[in-house]
Length: 319
Image 1 (cartoon, rainbow, N blue to C red):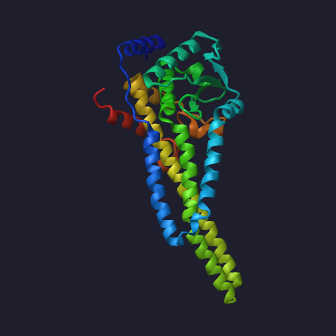
Image 2 (tube, rainbow, N blue to C red):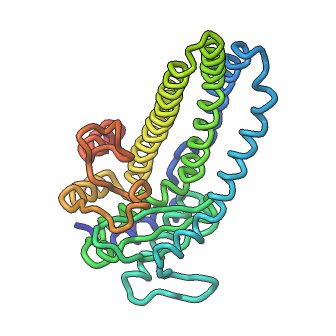
Image 3 (cartoon, rainbow, N blue to C red):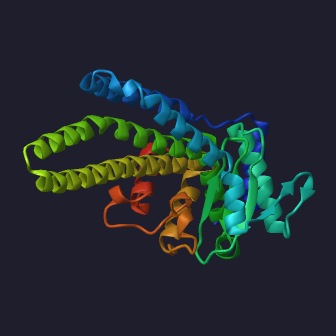
């Protein structure tokens, strides 16, 4: 296991030699994907409803966008208050670190940010939890927050901390927080609009049945179909968001491997595999570095540790 000093010396040497890490900013690819999905779905809905959705669509999308922006902009402040996060490192020109370990983690963060071209160092913090974990949040690359659990700070090795730091910084560099919030709101809005023709059919069916004297049967049928439709919309939205979440974990692992080394990242994941415990903050489970594994990855925010290690080995065969 390598210590903080090894990684500090390694990063300082790489920065001095001008060695940088190339990575693609996922936000651009995400925007393109969302744009084509929107064009296809809206064209289909407009054709089915003969353009009627143009009346309500702008309002739905505007409302969803405003909610997403407010949620993102307040995320860092809200999370710090909810979890009682204690900040360390340089905060507003004051050194808030309580020990040498926290000072070295901050120094490593500065070096990693230089390699990632992140201009403003994210805030670093510690929050109480009984599991070994960490998370990143924030509305943008230059307004990030990374918080480690108290148990991770106490029990994890230097190498595990560094690999975890690289993973969370990768989330910030990739704009993953912004992407996750936007894609959830975007998909929800589009699926709701797409369901409008079906809702119109249900309404027309109900009207014809009532006119024919089958009011009770019509009410039951309409109620069942509406519930099924809402369940399908919720399930599809959830599965799309979960798939995006797993994809961003793969990308963050890969970027962290490029930053701190393939073997360091793999050893970190192997250590965490044997120390996965439920968090006492379930609302943060989807944001954490690792989460308890499920029988099927399709229903999880995180891929299994085995799949994450295989992905790193596949993408970085030569290292």
